[in-house]
Image 1 (cartoon, rainbow, N blue to C red):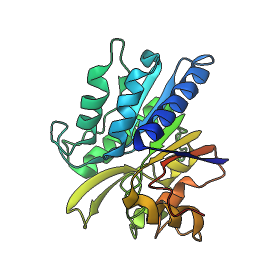
Image 2 (cartoon, rainbow, N blue to C red; image 1 turned 60 degrees about the horizontal axis):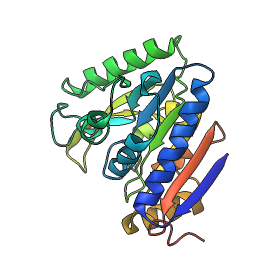
Image 3 (cartoon, one colour; image 1 turned 30 degrees about the vertical axis):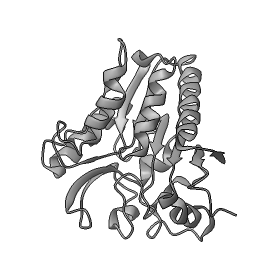
Image 4 (tube, rainbow, N blue to C red; image 1 turned 180 degrees about the vertical axis):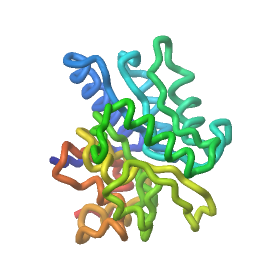
Amino acid sequence: MAKLFKLPTPQAAAAAAADRITKIISTINRKTNKVSLAVSGGSTPKLLFQELVKQQIDWATVHLFWADERGVPPTDAQSNYRMTKEFLLDSLKYPRPTIHRIPSELSAVDAAKRYTEDIVSYFNLQPGDFPIFDIVQLGMGNDAHTASLFPGEPSIENHSEIVAALYVEGKKQWRITLLPGPIQRASNRICLITGTDKSHALKAVLEFPTDPMEFPMQLAITTRGSTEWYVDEAAAALLE
C-alpha cells in the first residue's frame, strides 16, 4: 500500500510526517510498548526531527536506529548521529529513546559488522532472517539515492544481508547502510522529500519503469508493509 501526501511547504510536509510517525508509535504502544524506528540523515530530516520534538511521544518505548551513516566519528559535523542528536535527542526530556548507533568511529567494515550484530540481537534473528522495523524513515537525494544506496551501487542487488559497508566514489567517503532486505520488509516506510532539486528524481521514482539500480528510491515501492510519501509542492511539481 502506498499513499502520496502533497503539502504546501517543507515544514508542512515534515509536520505531517511527524504526526504520522507519532500515530504509528502510539498504535504500537497499545500492544507492545516496544517500537523500532530507523531514521535517515541529510538535510530534510532536520525539519522532521524538529517537528517530532513537539509531539507527545513516549520515547521510553522507542528503539532508535539509523538507515545509514557516514564513515566519520559521531562528533564529526557530517555524522548523521550528531545531526539527530542536535536536532532531536538533545531537545527531548527524559526518558529518552534507546539508542542503537552505528559505531562509525570504527572502520566501515567493522562498523557494519557491529551494527548487524546489534540488529540481530534486538530482533532475535535466526540465520537468514531479516529484521522487520516498525518504521523506516527515508529521504532521497536529487540523484534518487536513498540511505547510502546510490545509483549503480552493486549493493542494491544484495538481498541476502542486512547491513553493508560501501565506498561512495562520488562522495569519496565510506558509508554504512541498511540494505534492501530490511528497507523493503519494514512495516511502515515514511518517505519525506522536499525541494525543487528533488522534482526530477521524484517523478522518475514514481512514474518511470521500475529500475532500482538507476533509481534506488524505488526500493520503497514494495508490496510489503505500507509506504507513505510526504512531499512538498516544489518536489511534486513535475508529477502528473
